Each structure stands twice: as structure tokens, then as C-alpha cells.
Image (tube, rainbow, N blue to C red; front, top):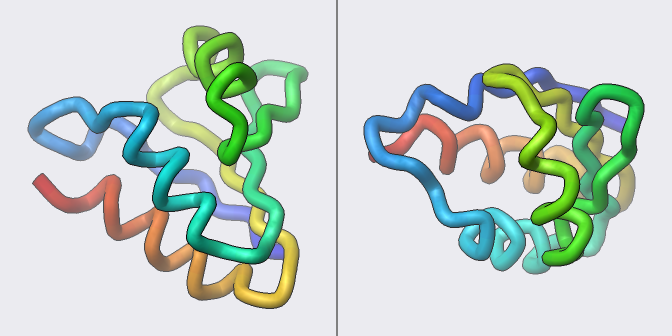
Length: 82
């Protein structure tokens, strides 16, 4: 399992939640974020809508599975791009 704290406000323009979900679904590993005391599945639209509203600027992502390293790198990259 890999955990990574990511600054979700580094982008100059906001990223649609649907783009993050679509990106996460490309990987076979589980991808979760921790918002306050809730565990939110990044691949679930409903969970993301409910959970992301409570998140702060820095979000802790958790990756667990066969391609967790590739998923972590891709998610981190999309928050760096414009």
C-alpha cells in the first residue's frame, strides 16, 4: 500500500471530479482518499461527491493493489498539470 499527501490546489484551473474518477478507474488497484474521518473510494462518483466537499487543500490518497505505483504517479501528475 502506498499513501501520498497531494496538494489538490496546485493546478491553475480546477479539475472536474469526473476526470479524477475516470483516471482512477483505469487502474486495477484500490484508490481511496481520507477526508476528515471518512474513507472515500475515488472510483465511485457518489462517494466522491459526498466526500470531496469536506476535504481540505491537502488530501491523503491511498493506493493498494497490483499497479498502485503507476496509479500514484498518474494521480500526482494530473494535479501538477494545467
